[in-house]
Image (tube, rainbow, N blue to C red; front, side, top):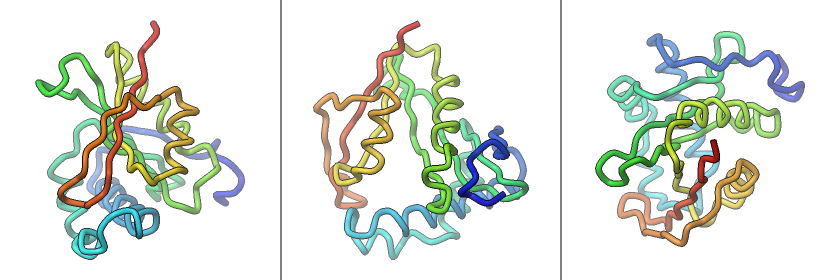
Length: 169
């Protein structure tokens, strides 16, 4: 598929195979290096290797759905429970799409699947870099709003802001 033609040929599915894990790792690695220069410390980006992302993909495969264009992973979403830190809150931990798929509907489809997985939670949340205007606009279109919570990430040096969405059943 030509990424400019839309997402109708994209398959969204749970991440299962080793090949899908490697594809997810590549999307994770490349997305950080494309989207975040100037938003996070260069030292963090320099230390974020494809090998590290691959290790994470294999070590933490739970709650991940991938977007596939044919056999190629072009995006993913990771969702789950906030646990004791925020009982009853489901979180979108990560949502990344390769830049050539921006504007094709892939991110919207991934978000729909992620929110379906979090449908039993009365509140859903995510964290976004304060400077990431593109992502903020997208999340606002999906119904998320800032709740005023911010923190500086010791790993990235960035200001992260929490956005929440109340689940109206």
